[in-house]
Image 1 (cartoon, rainbow over the protein chains, first blue to last red):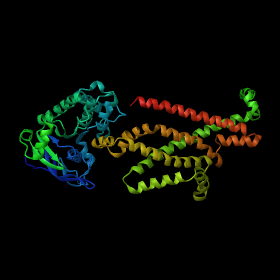
Image 2: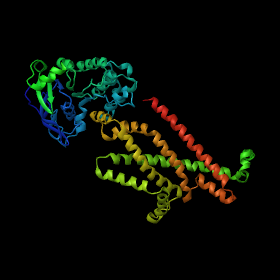
Image 3: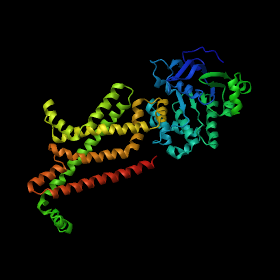
Image 4: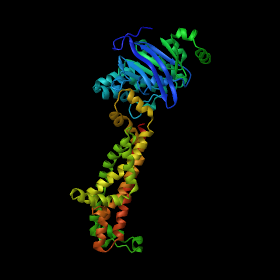
Length: 253
Length: 236
C-alpha cells in the first residue's frame, strides 16, 4: 500500500478514513474503521449481511453521518461541519441497489438533470455528454424511455451513467447487482469492469465474489462492524488470516 | 331565448307537479348564473393560494427545525378545530377593526379559504412527500442536488402525482364551501339566488337552479380530474 502522504488533495490517496464509528441508537454498526483508498484503486467490500459494509460505504458520501471519526476525500475533511458537503458529493458518484432513478423523467433527463442543475451545464452540452455516456453503457436507443419501461439491468446501467455524468473522481456502488435477475448481472458487471479499466477509483459493496476477485485491487472484509481484513484478492481468497473470513468464504465460494 | 327555455321547462309534468314556477324568475336567471363566474374565480384563487401555502406548510412539517414543525402542527389544529364559518366571519369583521382596511367579502373569503385549505392540503402533501421512496432523496443528494431544486424538481412532482385525487377532492370541497361567502355579502351563486328569492318571494326555484349548477360544476371537475389522472398514469 502506498504511504499516506497527502491531505492536500494532490497525493495518491483519494479517500482516507480514520477511526470511523457509527451507531444507530444503542446499536453500534461500525467500530473503529480505518482505511485508505488510493486513486484508481478498486476496492471490494465484502462480509456477511449486517456486518456494516453498506453503512460504511454510505458514510463515505455522508448519506449516513458518522458518530465519530474522520473521512477525508481529496484532501477535504467531509466530517468537518464547515465543509460544503454538497460540493464534495458532486465528486463522489453513488450507485444504489435499487437504482433510484427518477421515475418522472426520461432516461436522458435523468442523466442531464444534475449536470444542468448542479454544475450549470448548457442543455446541448449536457445532452451530448448524456448520449456519450449512454453509448458507453450501451443504451443510446433508450434515451427517451421512462425508467419504468426498462429492465433491472438497464436501469442500473442508466444509474451508472447518471452518476458518471457529474464526472466524479470516485464511484461508490452499494450492492449494485443484488436486486437484479441473474441473467442481468453480467451486463452491469461488464459496465463496471470497463469503468475500473478506465482508471476510476471505485468502492464496491458486493456479494459477487468472482467479480471482486477479478476486478478489485483490494478486499475489505467486514464483520460485526469491524474491518477484519484488508488484503489483495489473491491473499484474501487463498489464505485469509481470520477465522471469520475462512468461515465466510467456505459458505460463499 | 331564455324565456322560451323557461316556458318549456315549466310545461314539464314534474315541474307542474311540484308547483314550480320558473317563469316568475325568468328575467333574474342571467343574474343568478352570473354568480358562476364569481364562484369559480373565488374557488380557483383560493385553491391556488391554498395549494402554495399548503406546500410551504408541509415543508415546515417535515423540516428538521423544531419551531417550524411546531408552527405547522399548531396552525393545522387551529383551522381543523374551528368551523370555517367562524374563521370566515372573524377575518371579515376583525380585519377592518385591526388594520383599518375595509376588506370586501370576496377578499376576506379568499384569504380565509386559502388559509383553511392550506391547513388541510399541508397534511395531504406531507403524507405524499413522505410516501416517496427515500432512495429518491438519496439519489438526488448523492448527485450534489441541493434541497430546493430537489424538492421542486424531484420530490414534489412525484408527490403531487400521487396525491392528485386528494387534491381534487379538496378543490371540490372548496367549490362547495365557497357558498359560505354568501353570508358576508360576496355575490356568489348562492347569494344571488337569495337576492332573487327575496325580491320575487320565490325561494325554491332559484335555489334549485343553484343546486343544479353546483352539481354540474363538481361533476365537470371530477371528470376532468379522472382524465388527468389517466394521462399521468400513462407517463409513469
